[in-house]
Amino acid sequence: MRSNQDTTGKQRSPTRPFDAKGIRAGFPILKQEVRGKPLVYLDNAASAQKPQVVIDTLGRFYSTSYANIHRGIHWLSERATEAYESARADIQHFVGAAEANEIVFVRGTTEAINLVAQTYGRTHVRAGDEILISTMEHHSNIVPWQMLCEATGAVLRVAPINDDGELLLDEFEKLLTPRTKLTAIAHVSNVLGTINPIRRIVELAHSHNVPVLVDGAQAVPHLAVNVQTLDCDFYAFSGHKLFGPTGIGVLYGKAALLETMPPYQGGGHMIQSVTFEKTTYNKVPDRFEAGTPHIAGVVGLGAAVDYVKAIGLDAITAYERELLTYATDRISRMAGVRLIGTAKEKAGVISFVVDGVHPHDLGTFLDNEGIAIRAGHHCAQPLMSRCGVPATARASLAFYNTQEDIDALAAAIHKSIEFFR
Ligand SMILES: *Cc1c(COP(=O)(O)O)cnc(C)c1O
Image 1 (cartoon, rainbow, N blue to C red):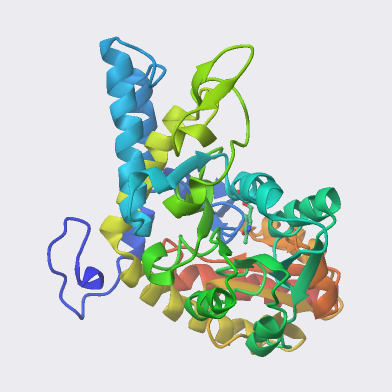
Image 2: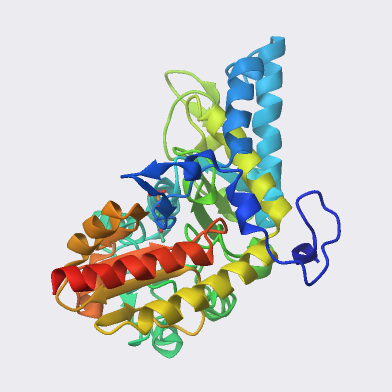
């Protein structure tokens, strides 16, 4: 069992606690003081910090192995190509994909979803067809589908949620019709923390012959994901939320589906042959990786998934669940504080509003205390209106956060309530 292994792969005794402080020591940025206070970083849902191993991997790659990939015949190019393709294999195993060619490198979750909307969508979706999403989606999982609907005359349908922020599965199922061409749902909500029952959602959708795209941006840093167990058709995530570099992300797609999809962008490497009369396209996934990719980003992301794997996602999930329970308890007990998102199944995201204090003012106040949170609509304006708030404050956890971080947060919220009274 992975939760019983430490970073060297040795058995960890079941009673040995999760070493968040030791892990934190491997993140140089977290050792800083900001505004004269020790940094408390609780904005992990916006982007996660990078461990030294990822930083070192990038430095080493550029110092020793960097060149353009795939087309070079020289030693460095071969080395860089090996590093790039071996990271693809690491990521394949990380998400449990059947084949390495089911992993397409893109800039991030946003680009992954746009790729599917523009290629799968443009070939399979016609006027009058429907795309089904949910109320809790990030703008990245709304706007690309709206653009597709505008271009094709298809219709966007939205499955509702309850007041705790849980998807209403009965309503979701009612919206699956013969016109539904695809459903796209977040695995974990970036605002509410809700963990959606993706396995069940896929079963329901597949029973109506509807393929499923999962927005996994907030899931991969917190939960063990296996795309074959989930049986989803597409799975999208970003490297930067998974302790890897910015500008790199992943689209997983079932090979059989990717094979049917035309290219997204035209250019170098995505072709098999080009004449002015006709161009034929490369195989999958190269067909979707036009131009020189973010080579170092891929190598850095490979290092990040190896790092996360060594800690073990089961151990991470268990630790973060404890920390979430602790934080939820501390914050919800404060007079004047209301949690937004109280689903039974949650990952480490705590959205809240404080009576009489605008979330932005609270965010600025906390920043002065050295505490980084996020305030705003979190790229989910339709969800904000469903929750009846213009914005929330959001503290989001990673495995390097500790009870002391939560204590500092709670103390600062308390202080702000006094201050703004
Ligand atoms: C962050 C996020 C995205 C967008 O990710 P990018 O890295 O900005 O492309 C999409 N969906 C969810 C749920 C997110 O949290």
